[in-house]
Image 1 (cartoon, one colour):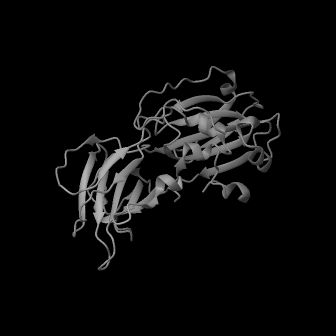
Image 2: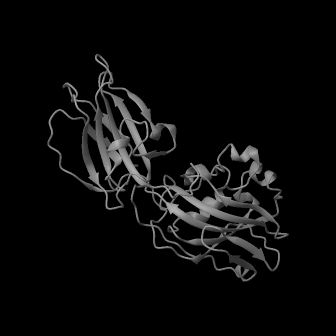
Image 3: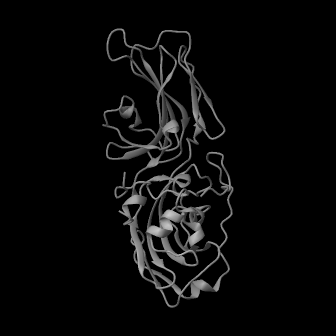
Amino acid sequence: MLRIPAVIAVLGLSALTLAACASAPGSASCDRVDSDSSIFDVVHSSGEFGTPETTLDAPVNVDATTVRDETAGDGLRVTSDDQDVFFSVSIVDGATGKAVAAGSGQIQSLSAWRENYAGLADAMMCATEGSRIVAAIPASGLSAQAAESWGVAAEQSIVVTLDLTKVYLAAADGASQYNDRRGMPSVVLAPNGRPGIIIPDAAAPTDLTTETLKKGAGAEITAQDTARVQYTAVDWGTRKVTSSTWEDGASRAVTTGADIPFASQLLGATVGSQLLVVVPGASAGSSATAYVIDILGIDPVTAAR
């Protein structure tokens, strides 16, 4: 785990809001341009991917976040602050070269990182999964609390080597599928992909029922995998939302054997898919629940959850 002061750890290394390149789910429009700066002549990154190290030949100080891709990955691109990311970093003090933090953060959205670590979020925007990113970040790219906790004065900077291990979809981006089963809920989507569930004026199915609303082109979920999902649950009888990761503001890690009513239906589904699952009431007189689940990716085995 990334070693950081406890007060910041509680916030999940969160980060200041800047505009993303694109906000639509699945958008691929985002330009990645290296900063033209001589500071990278004195910055050296080493270590295997996932365990980066950073050393300096001379002090580094910048007025704005300065970025270069040491290597560019060929995975999914970060185009939205709504996307979850997982990365490892090596951070040193720009004035002394002394280590400030090292390790892996938790899986969370880029917007969550921005609350206290805007510079890190800026460094990842438009980058691709599998990239090694080198960045110099001024104290202004950190919240006052984060800068103080790391001992970074207002006129100082940090230097970062960041390995972008995993980038997740912001929402299901698969191909829409035709379903003709009568009496099933309808699903409407907000511009960011967040689903709304419309319960029909009909009795709920008496058996567990699953439809694929979108078929993703990603990997199939196996029994050994931990899927990263967003979901919304609506009570069939009251037509009210009973739980929603979208409302909670964080995705969820789910295995196919988890004690979650829809978990078993993830087995064999593909990343990028959206499922509609109706689970009958657990007992006589209890109401069914309709779930819409977006499969955003598969968590790396080493990821913090």
